[in-house]
Image (cartoon, rainbow, N blue to C red; front, top):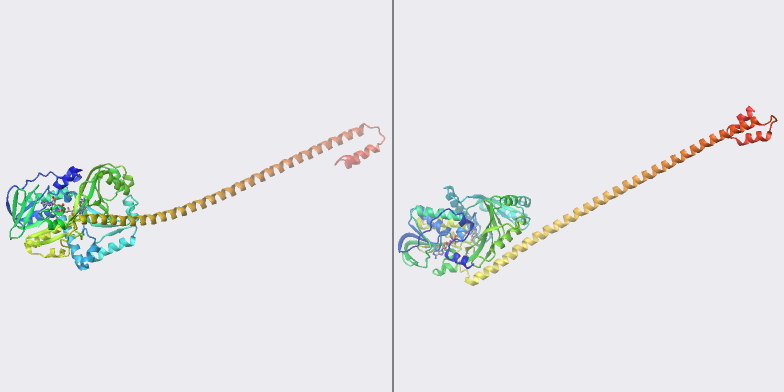
Length: 542
Ligand SMILES: Cc1cc2nc3c(=O)[nH]c(=O)nc-3n(C[C@H](O)[C@H](O)[C@H](O)COP(=O)(O)OP(=O)(O)OC[C@H]3O[C@@H](n4cnc5c(N)ncnc54)[C@H](O)[C@@H]3O)c2cc1C
């Protein structure tokens, strides 16, 4: 822990996935003597590097002072997502400066993306740009998503495609998400390799970069500015402060205007199949919560970021915490191993907009890019370099977002409270959507159960009817069989009676033949009355 905190203070790269996959880059020297330069840049993150590159490309002599290593802070540890806009929500910007100026600011943020895109087009090793960003909602609001898409399209010329919940859930195997806006213009990069390429280009064009060289103070009064470092001074025509949250006590006005906010990232172990099954989108995904999750696949690993805090350093059990966050969204990824986990510090101004502008003639600031610096730092470098070289005044659009005191320790505590408040708000929205969904699911389940019960009852009634009919048929057949048997019995008896009567008649006839000739009237009568069928015949015969 202490080790990690020290690393944060010195800017030494932590054990990040990016550091592990960085292109080879030799350490740079400290400044050990006084030097002269055209433009001195304080800070070797994206803001300092894009600014220095812009000057170097115009043939200016630049020197970059970096307290740690190039892109050792936020710039080399971030999500790598390059997209339009700012850390401040667009609606807040409109509120503050009006629609027309908001449009101009948004267009500038898109120019920042174009600068990054153009640099990538020149071919940078190990940056691996991947297009696309999906902004997913964790609450159900189709109309709200549609309004957002229309707002961006109509006023800011940025078309985003609305994905309904079904499409989102087919693509991302989680029930946490509802609708999404697809931003096809956005893209993701390996940020550290991009920063290292910028540094290499600055040096190739004759610029100087000193690492482990902290600017500790400055004299900005004269035409020539003097920047102090522990082992040498820099004398320059212009100076640009790009130190973000780490600028230090030597520059109290800048330090007071910035609020350091930590956020966290991790890289899983390689999980090719699980990634393919659960995250069927190759671009970056970010949820729309105030402090939401952001992630993307990097090869066969998942790079996941989220959470914010005003506490410095890497929290204990960070890997476990982030693994839990992942599993909460993707239950199927529960138990996936986390190979790297790290923290990074973003510099926020109280208004969440970048601080870009002139402090006094020859002294400039480019800071406060918050969680949205990959496009805006490139834009800031362009605005400041063209302001100094060409007297371009576009930077003035940022005057409404000046250096406002960020509140010091109290500001930090307030931010933490605000963050907790925002989290509670996010949770409420989510819970409401989940409850609605739960109620709808329960109603659907009850309806399905009712239908199943009805079908079962109908089936049972049918089976009962069939059984009764079979029973009836069986009884009828038995009755028929019984009647037939009875009939047969009767027939048999009849036949026996006839046979017996015939036999009796025969016997009687025999007896008559054997008797004396005198007619025995008694016997004759007996025969005439007792024998069935034959008597008349017998009588006739006799
Ligand atoms: C985890 C994480 C994820 C993020 N994800 C994204 C994302 O996906 N997309 C996006 O757009 N943005 C993202 N961001 C924000 C983005 O990284 C920053 O906005 C951007 O890198 C800011 O660049 P910077 O140069 O202003 O600051 P930094 O990168 O902090 O650089 C400032 C540099 O100045 C040096 N310095 C400070 N003071 C002095 C001094 N006195 N003397 C000499 N050197 C000094 C520091 O050592 C440091 O290297 C993320 C940030 C973090 C931490």
